[in-house]
Length: 357
Image (cartoon, rainbow, N blue to C red; front, side):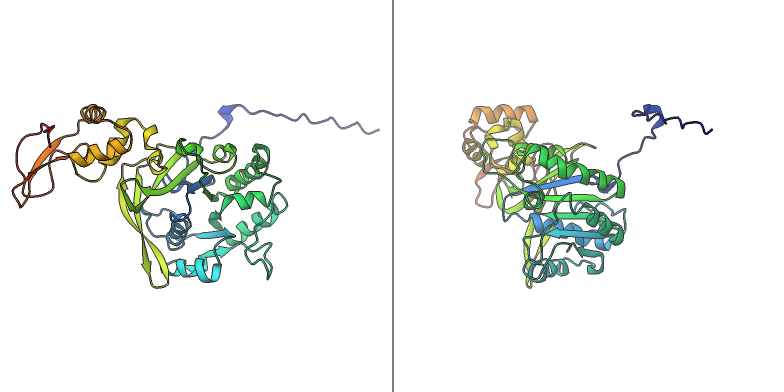
């Protein structure tokens, strides 16, 4: 007589000393962690899609990143899930202009038809298709542009529960396949809130992301844009990166101009919510300004002259006078940490600010 099988006990826990610690890995540190969900926010027309394609082009060729950081992956594959920009007349010309290796960049077409060439997948129905595509293409970065139609196609309304129903399994897929997802999202129209609350849709979207970024116009030079971190769960936040959009033949390129000390909150127009020291640090991050220009800009942002003087003293900002060609002496405020002008012709009148300038 056979003995009845003993039921195997299922253990629903594991001691932490049995788990091997693993350091976070990066496609681009500290912006894009490997195997995680990431987010890029911004208003229309700020260059969000173009920046994602610039990153795709760099990854496809193994080129260095906008901050000149070496690409440790080497040439790698990228998967695009796009529903707004046309592949033939927009995405393809942009990637060609950016120097992409097109053999390494793939467009996800699971639900596309002749009438809807860029149809978005629907989840959870299409999870298996997507995972199969990622395994076959060996993509290391997936760009989903934009996020909200992607979620709306998969759920009945963008609620906290429906968002987690989609992004939770995607986070596990990203971890399992060591793929990074980068979602693009528009800002909402609510004023008076910090960058972390300005993204469209449920707050659970941001909660699901390990790295969140924002693109906006430079607060003092609207011709320039800034890429800045909003949140990072894995390491310290980076400085912002400045760039401009340049026309090239039939496409537009991104020209990166280096690091700037400007934070995400300064890119959403709500400068009054910033402490005066933060506003002043951002205003003087990469340029000398005449003292009267500092006062004028500060007044528009809601800071009195006395408030700016206190912030100046707190930050240790220096004032310096320069004699111009016409003989006129003009006082300037220097960026934090600087003690002198880069110009050769300097009038050495000390560091005390002239309040009557």
